Image (cartoon, rainbow, N blue to C red; front, top):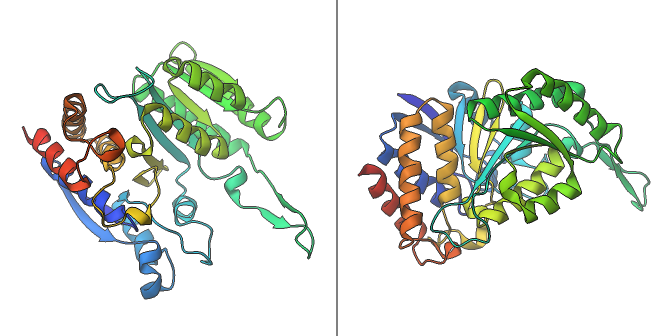
Length: 336
């Protein structure tokens, strides 16, 4: 029995997490859940959107399934998600995007994983106004050899483990010669160690965006610095049907948090409307991470059946099913 931390989150978080837990139970996965919470919903009780008990629980259990959270305005740090990544050294952000047979889409055979360096770049938060009048501001973009090498090794090891064929490094080293230049240099050094095992190439970020719109089926694993990965993973989600289908993971050497890419969408909270697939797919990633491949495969086969049928779908996929109804129908498929 594996114990995991569950953070239900804010807004639509509790609904999509409950949907994922229902499907996890149907898969037969031997899991025990420890519930804690973070975000706006705990501010009144704890005076912080990230209570110590959340960090303690994740450190104890090593793995967490998390719903989207709202970071209150005026809190002590910029983002609950960024703070979790920083405190737990979750340096790899992994976001798969995949087309499913049966869903109406502009593209076919898209199967891309964006792997984003999670701890530095512009998101390091080193920024300030340069005068008292706040007439101008500057941000310092930090890229280190250690972090760039670490994330490059992660990307190639991920490609090997998942039977992927190619890693593409996305950068702007022609202009940002020091920062992106260093990221690219580290990528090339690491790539040599995988020569003959995994193909590798690099693309400028602007060209990469165009290529993804023109021929996304040609790309496999994308390795990016922090900001580029945040943007390009949403672009990839758009290729396959939107954020409702976009799972994610934040992974370090000791801990891992699995969560949907989308936000807390407070206007939809409690309406039983949103698509829980991104959270369910995040749970599938979690199962694979902890070695429960069989249970992960059962959920994926069930999802593929549901999408092929095209009968029970949420509004964003052209259907009328609610969050709970979709999850219950999928759970029945998984149990078959």
